[in-house]
Length: 114
Length: 115
Image 1 (cartoon, rainbow over the protein chains, first blue to last red):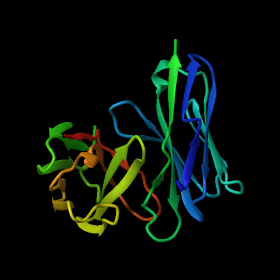
Image 2 (cartoon, rainbow over the protein chains, first blue to last red):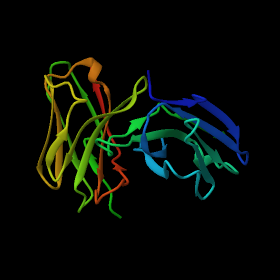
Image 3 (cartoon, each protein chain N blue to C red):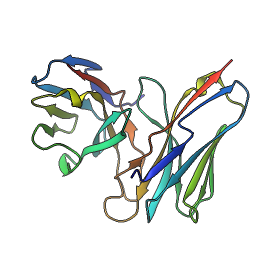
Image 4 (spheres, rainbow over the protein chains, first blue to last red):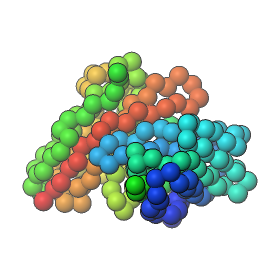
């Protein structure tokens, strides 16, 4: 069973609208949770990194939230732009042992239409 | 601007052939990762190195995959013999580990197709 589950698998929204992507994880204990953006044909690029003690982290129009009690995170995109069309991947880093081993979700594919 | 480079960007080969993928990490980074991405599995860690020493290659099929860092500016991932199920995008990432958690910077990937 995948330790990091994302929903929805894909999403289509109109330019200018907001959207929220979800991530549920079972990795415990964990060190940090990251959201990556992956454009088609490119490698993932980090958007936010949150430690287990943080609740929210923003990066421009991207805001990530974390609830360590329910093991859920969300990524909210405000005023979407065409360039936001990409795959968004939730990544959890376990605490203890090799903290640089990342566990990846399978991503949410977002399409922003004009 | 500093970035991870990977070659080749695309590779099509026949089953049984040897495939070598190369990665140049960001100058000064001391940790290098190899990942494989497929539609079904997403991103999976294959191996990683710190200061050129292999630390973990438990994600790699040992019988056919090998990863090395001949020097600080070059990491290689070799598949011999290749199989159709190896078709995927292979990413290299590098990072500067200095205690705590740290950012990984990904290259553009090598898209491998084995026929």
